[in-house]
Amino acid sequence: MACVSCGNSRSDRPNSQQRPMTTSDEGGEEALNARAKAFCLRRANQLASSKKRWERRRDPATGQMRWYNGTLIEVEGASAAAGSKKEAKETDGNNSQKGEKKASTSLSSASTERAFVRQIASDGVLSWVPASEASFSSTSNVEGTKIDSHDLEGAAGLPFDQKITWFQKSIASMRVPRSEGVVKIQVRRTHLLEDTFAVFSSMKSSDFRRSLFFEFAGEKGLDYGGVARELFQLLFDQLFNVDFALFKISSGNISYDINENSTLAIGQEQSLEYFHFAGQVFAKALFDGHICQHHLSLPLYKHLLAWPCSLTDLEYVDEMLANSLRMVMEGTKEDVECMDLTFETMTSAFGKTETIALKGDGEDVVTYANRDEYCHLLIKYYLLDRVSNQLGQLLKGFYDVLPQALVSIFDFQELELLSCGLTQIDLNDWRRHTIYKHDYQTLGENHPVIRWFWECVNELDDEEKCRLLQFVTGSSRVPVSGFAGLQGNDGNVRLFTIDSVSVKMSIFPRSHTCFNRLDLPNFSEVGSADDIGKDKLRDALMKVLHMELGSLGFGLE
Image 1 (cartoon, helix red, strand yellow):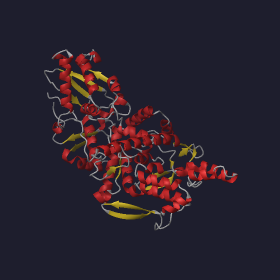
Image 2: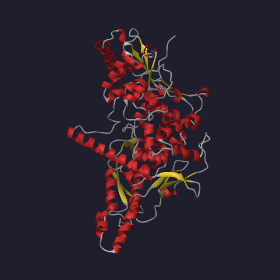
Image 3: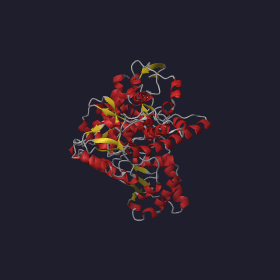
Image 4: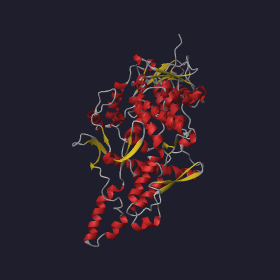
């Protein structure tokens, strides 16, 4: 009787069309890397301060969930114009009246970045409201569960690792048991995106809570997790391919943002349908515990969670524009008047430039008194208005699969970690959460072949470690809970496993991605000395990791 293999997914090779562009000039590349590192550091600092600044909790007076910033956020108070360092310096030490002005300036400086939250209607239409006015139902349960707002509030206060556990248990309670039927999906590798899109478009929201049983046409593999893992990875590669035009590389060159010109490149109706599909794919990956290797821009994670957005977030869409707006907000009256600004902005698409009025006909002049309104409207345009149709459909597709309330327990940084996994591989964590079978079971890490194996892995560079992980598990990323959270079929934890196979049966390692299992030839059979057995193991491992992709697929062993 033939044994059905779940296949082995080879490591993905970077596609220049799917990754941020770099320059071929060595000096330019170093400068670009330095800029990216500085951007990442700045982002980390902003994330840390934002997590301390915003908190969603119950209003004791109304019972509704509201956004708090130490005290309830007020956005209609003193003008954001206050707080200029130059103005404060000019008033310092002159007289008591100027001293009072300085004090009020210091107190109101926190209002320079007014916060707004997107609201979504049932049809996907978005609106933009001050954070203090955004509220959430206090009585609705998460559909299909017994989870209410009190449960969500409690879960939101848990440490991150406990949030993940709570989230996974909630998902399990929503999942339709496999015994009650699965959704079988056959796709062609050459038409992967179109075939999956057609199936997802015909599915109801309840269908996404069933197990999806994928099959590649012409390949005789059974899907117990490995096929689905590869399929989602390939889907994300195609959805985020910049030539497909749904997404583009965001400011800072490290993540992906919605392409505001997608409707022009693809067509209005088809573009919106694909954004709805992208939301479903992203949410179903989270539902089933699959990793998305493509990082969204920070504002997109905030929109998914209905988190407050402000001037800081504009940096991830257009860093130069964000810096210019800060100059407007921090400048003196003379500085603002010299800028000669009006309530309009310019956009370009396919060589055509268009003027967009932010207010009325756009001819109103920006003054020191109305600059706060100007900045707010410009931020609203770039973070919401120009992509509102695409974003609305992305969110609608996402919530078709995962209720918005369920993911609200995470903050935007946690959501990114949950969806993208860890970026570095901890070898010690890997070893701690590996189990051994058959010839290797008794001695474990003390078995010579296992000792050689980990010594060889330690010699691999970061890319090769990712290749090895993908060869065995189907994904080059580690879950946020580390190797202890590796999942197999049906979302159950299935630790990395090394099984033995005789060199008479195979001289190359074999993988079973559905079960996170590596069949490692027992090279101690050919010699116990390191210069014999270890060398043969290293040679076989490197050949497997660097073989061509032509043998990619699922079939019989």
